[in-house]
Length: 181
Ligand code: ADP
Image 1 (cartoon, rainbow, N blue to C red):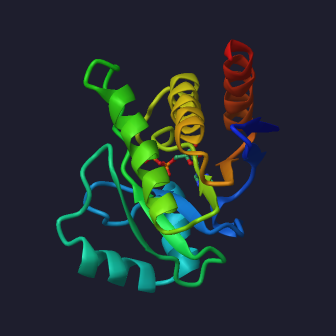
Image 2 (tube, protein in one colour):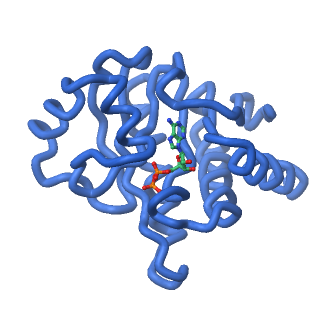
């Protein structure tokens, strides 16, 4: 599914984040930048040890929840990995929506600061972190749409969704969001 927002492309695909030929791929990282399963495991496995070496050196304190940091992409076909730290879902009254929005916004800011024209996001926080899929899709999409409207960059934001149910949740939220505008 594709939409044009302020002249830029917003795209949803079902696929694997590590295979994306974009300037930056976003990792669903943890705040210690310690590696893990899911997206994080796949990125470090495919990208090789250079990514962790760089984040250990540049960000020994890790990255706060709701924010993001950037590194090279090792052997991945991207130029950069943006390590975004989404919140763990704990019922929705602990600032989860603001933190999830912050992780997306900071990722986009870093992408623009590094002249990335294309960025691929996974569905941050919807795996081990347990964020309800529909709610996460709504926050992720509305944050990206607002950013594209405000800054007119990057040229392409692609959500790479792992499995049909995740894709369908994002597709129905995007259809809703487009109708609302
Ligand atoms: P979090 O800890 O932020 O919840 P996870 O990596 O556990 O992050 O999961 C986030 C989302 O990414 C889930 O929807 C999961 O199915 C999906 N996912 C897992 N592996 C990949 C991959 N290789 N590419 C894209 N998405 C993936």
